[in-house]
Image (cartoon, rainbow, N blue to C red):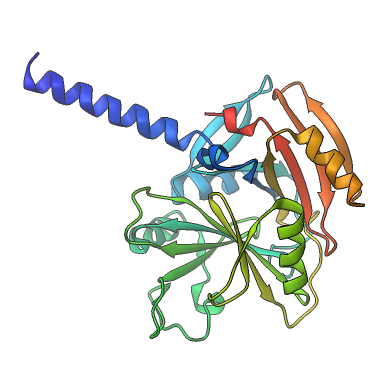
Length: 287
């Protein structure tokens, strides 16, 4: 075997391995409950997909018997609803979602080159200096940040983690509410998230994602009908989980249901502050 042949075979192996990693909820192996998907609404779904694919580098994927198009990133899928939202994600209980990248500058430039809006100057914490749409790390240390807005009004935070090997991966979901500590306690109790202290805001972790909870000076509304219509958790043994929820007094907005076209099962609940939540089992097989 020539050196050139060996090189080509090695390159193909790397590409196949990368594709496999991108195509799965890789954190699913790390716990019975992981984060699964964001489901966004937009009047122009093609433009919304363009944001996540052309600008952020997600991979377009067709799933199920109906060839439903979704976008995949490590540890999260983006689903789309062709429906004009009643408002953006700002002002709701899920203010924004976050991805991490090893280098912010090329991602920011790609977002702008594709005609999408950077909103770092208005959304960055007040202790940051914003230059060319990137909020630098604060004096006490931390990560540089940037914020963008999808055409449908979903606020997206980008966190720079220079040691990260993946070009883009799920980082966090950021909840806002006037009872943010109670919100965190609910997600710890219901989903088994692990409390984390010491950061700029209360947080709790699940495999592959941070759930952040900031106090909101203004009242917020629930998510259903807004740009982020609902969030999703992938559950191992969903039927048993829904039975446990009912035993806790939590009402199922939609009961345990098989989705034959996708080969999955789902259920829906709503947290006490209005966040609409889809529970799934089977998303981790999509690749």
